Structure formats: C-alpha cells, structure tokens
Image (cartoon, rainbow, N blue to C red; front, side, top):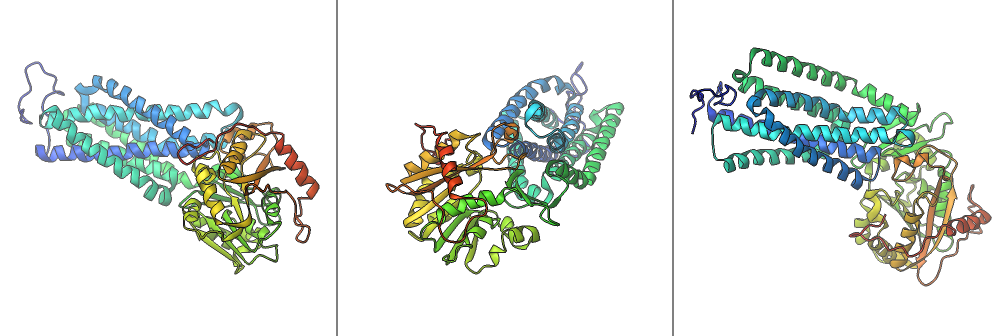
Length: 545
C-alpha cells in the first residue's frame, strides 16, 4: 500500500502519485464516494428528463425511451474509453467534465422545449432538426457520464491503493445507490414540485457544486494555480447561467406555452398524471383542453366528438351508465340529457382533472356542471384495475372515453383483457362504445381495436365523425398535424356476440345538435371502406398498436 504522502516514484508525473489531501485518507475516500453518489443521482435525472420530454413532445414513450437510453448507454461506453487519456490529470479532468455536464444536462430540457415551441413543433420540415437535437443531447450527456467512472476510479485509488475488485465494488455501490435516489427523486419530488425545467436546472446546480467541491476542496493541491482558477471561474459561470435560467424559468415557460397553445392559456398545471392546459373558455372564446400537449377537447369540435361517442350507445336501456375516462365531464353531460338515467359512474385516472372539471368556470360551464348532479359518482382510479373489482352485469351502457390507442400508456386500455372485463360488467343487452383513434391517419390501429373487441366476444359496428379543427393532432405522433388526411375520430359500438349492434339514434328526445341519422349511416359506410382484415388482437403481454 502506498501512503498518501509518500514521495512519488522518480520520474513519475506529480498527478499520478499519491494524492496530497487536506484530510485523512479515510475521510477523503468517503468524500469521493459521496461525490460518486451525487453525480450518479444527477446523471439519472438527466436521462429521465430526456425520456420524459421526448415522450411528451414527440409521443410514443416506448420508442423515445429506447432511443434515448440506447444512445446514452452507447455514449457512456465511448466516454469511458476516451477518459483513459485524462487519467494523468484526473482531478482537473473530472472538474471540467462535471462543469460541462452540469451546463448541458441542466439546460437540456429548456433547449428542447424552446425548439418545440418556436420552430413549429416536431412535424413537417422541422421533424429532423429537433430529433437530431434530442439524440445530440443524449449522446453528449452519455459521453460525459461515461467519462466520470474512470476518473473517479483513478482519484479513489490515488487516495489509498486497494485491489481492483474492491475499488470497483465500492465505486459501483455508491453509483447504483445514487442512481436509485435520482430515479425516485425525479417522479416523486422534482417533477411534481419543481417541474421539468426547474428540476433539470437545479440538478445541474447540484452537479457542478458537487464536482467543484470535490476537486477544488479535496484535490486542490493536485491542481496548478492556473487550473484551480480556470475551474473556479468556469464553475461560477455555469452556476450563474443555471441560476439565471431558474429565475427566468417561469417567464420562459409562459412564453413557450403561448407559442404552443396560443395567447388564451388560462390554466396550466402538472397533476400526478399529466400536464393539463386550458385555453380560452371565457368571454365567448371556445375552450381547448390539452392533456400532455395533445388537444383532448377542441372548442369547435368537442360537441361533435361527444355526441358521436355517447348517443349511438344510448338507444335502448340506459339507466346505469359507466364512463371510463372522460374526467372532463363532457361525456357525462351528454348522458345526463337522457331522463331515464339513474346513475353515472365516472372512473378517471387523473384526480386533478376531475377537480378542474368541477371548479374551473369555463370547463364546468361547458360540461353543464355535470359533477353537481347527484346521479354522477366520480372515482379516481385506473380503469383496468377498477374493472377487476366491479360488480357483474351492473351497467346498461359502458362508454370508453380514453386516449388514442397508439399512446403507450393507453394500450392496456385497448387490450383483449380490458374488453373482457368490460363485457363482464355489462348487463344482458348492454352496449359498449369505444373511441378507437383516427380512422383516416391510423386505420390499422382502428381495425386492431375492432379485432380485439371481437376476440373478447363482442360484435362491432364501426363509424367515424369528421372534425373541423386543425393544428394539434389527437393521436400519439406529434407529426400527425402535418398530414393532409382529414381530421376525424373513429368509434366502435359493440354488443356481446352474436347480436350485431345497429347504429341508430334514439327516436325520442334528446336530439343531438350535430349528429343526424343520415350522417351517422354515411359515417358508418365511410369507416367500413377503410377496413383492414386479418389483424391480430392486442393483449397486455403483446400490444399491437
């Protein structure tokens, strides 16, 4: 074992000999492992930030997570190899890497959001540039994270030599525990309390402080006078940039929201489930509801959508109605127009959206104050989990007002198992209606939903309704807004086989305002013309969307 203050070998570089520490070797070793822990936590937060932003801005969370994580892991390997050249100047090299990593990782979320907001989104001619920026950030952050490990290994060995296996075990233990803390802090602390932008910036601040404290405090004697001042000034500049960005994050986010959603944004909140944005809805302006950046309720088209979703399913018995999703209360509004309705159960995953539908003046006025009706009973729960404990044959009508099947988080709600549970809660002669995504732009997904319903024991009738609003796509792909295909919604009315459902409207009141029987018949024929045969049902273990 080489003592920490023993003279270096003749001819050896002063940066490869034992470290000259201001503290005892045991304390120094502990401080290095603490820095490993902090840097690992910060590194995983950067990774999760990129995955979250890629999923939010582009869509299809599985694909985006795969791209980001695979590029980062590849880059970490390259960074680790490249860092071998810095081992002779491990302290200075580690300080420089942490300074750059804090700046790049801390500002990555803000840069991606700026590109999304001010370059027209992720579709059209801008599609390549933003995606390249995402890959570039993944590559850069991965290179810098990968370079940390060899340099930290060199530093910890210079404090006290030990066998390679023991040093690796200690280093990786601190690294993996730090990654655990970072992985848990992101969804439970940073995202709900600070948001993605401020959370990333504060993570960068912690990163540069930890790296700077280790190098300029513990290993300062290993640095030249010039290197110490260079690292100190660079760290202070990065801290100044990050602190300024934190101070301006609120104004930046409001400006970016106006660029994305227009100037009528009234409410923007991050619930436990998603980002909810309300635009308009006052002074005669139409209300738009965005969930995670996707237009869920369009002011001019929401009535067309909800009337097409609800009214064909209400022909027949409809005393007991179950709405899966639909936390905005707009499907419940249409159901309550029928006098024979005795009870409406709404199962919505996002309790924040339910609260907003009650108290926001624009949204509550639009849903006709549906949640003030004593017949409506909202529940905050996952629809699949809730159905597993629901009573059998309890409902005459089940309305699945759920996000597009192509959105990864929603695929389980379009599975054969899910529809089997929905069939179990239907009373004899009951009807299930499903929003199955756009027909014109995603016919394969639409007809996969139909095949899945048939596999669960339903007979189906397809139909679609054209919308008038343009701009934000309702589906999983942000670039869908650039498509020339008509904007539409596809629906499937289902009844337990073998009896096939008939698409008819209730001959008595209430009459839909936008939907007529001739139009519904024409919409059924239009959807049928897009039929794709031979598709396999989607299941929980093998999603097909």
